[in-house]
Image (cartoon, rainbow, N blue to C red; front, side, top):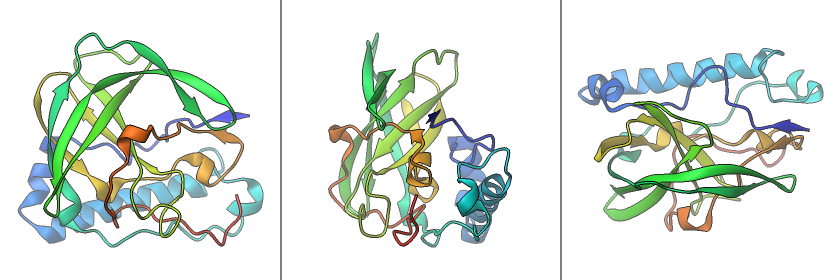
Length: 207
């Protein structure tokens, strides 16, 4: 069986500085999102990096997405957790892998105040790290994958404001291939509203 390995093209990574240059121009922001999505399409088409089984790769025509919408680009207040302990995060295929809680992200989406926990994968160190932000919302099982979606954010582990872009929310690889083992979204990371942004899911296609 395979793990839900990180894509070679880091399409889900967001930094505050990377987005600032786009914030003043909706067209530039939309273009950037579309470029990221195009890069992911090429990754899925490449037999060396695709998560798709051979039977699905032959008919793959691209992933479904919501239209880019800057109202789902949220400025979050990141509060790190000091000396967080490792814990076993359940994955699909009855597996468990070690993560730690990196901190909390407090933000607002369309007038609703929300909070998510960001996690660190075991062994991730350095001044700048990749925060793993899994979440579920009220679109799951309807327009988006029932198991939830993920966002990856590059940040340092000190209090700061972070841009959390739900237009970059992506499905786990197990949504496309049941041979992959993927993190199960912790219950605390449910957003009690619909987040129609980022990657959709086509339930008509079997894994």
